[in-house]
Length: 279
Ligand SMILES: [Zn+2]
Image 1 (cartoon, helix red, strand yellow):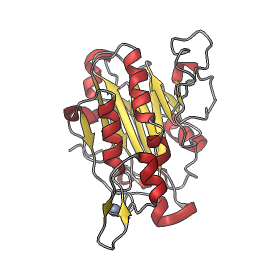
Image 2: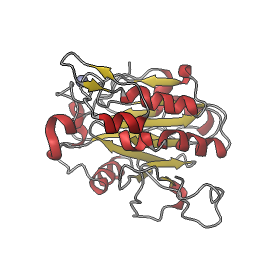
Image 3: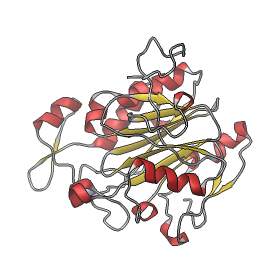
């Protein structure tokens, strides 16, 4: 559901428009946007880690839990952290509610944290961020126009087709070539579910080694991208399970209510992340 916060905007026929959070930029986009490196120094350098970047994944980052350790993981604190470190960038975070609400950064007033689960921006100075702890972070960007998006997609959001809706909204802004990266999220190795989740997602479950039904949220997100016209060759799945990878990621299933939140971010400018490992 596209949540339009400006009455005369181009998405008014779609519905409401949302907003989102921040991230980091990519080299690919630099071709179009004359990327200007920005230094990101988040605490000790060793605390910043990024899951291997290849090609188009250079446009977004999926941070480990150490990036957000010490903060409460909530939208405001994450925004404050990134805003401080990414000076010159507009950092957006969302009040995530497992909905299909999508907002445009340009519709968000300064200081506002809109209730939404995806955000789109055409501003190269924007950084869009989502927070997850088992849910799927999807970062998307256009190759042909300045356009980025960050999506928080749990099973509820996936069932509501938030991924397809967000990509469709991006296409409506003129992009024909969209790529996306699916970040660390709970894998089917650990995502034991009941029939309600299976029915909502409309997917075929698998049975794990203990005889429990499991579903693959990574694949569900990828299928959403495909349904919106993003080809498999333009989709990267990090393939990292937040529940299994106890050292690097927070996990709601593993840690419960007190779990922190992993940060995923995307931006329209090139960043320099000290200690960043790009693979
Ligand atoms: Zn796992």
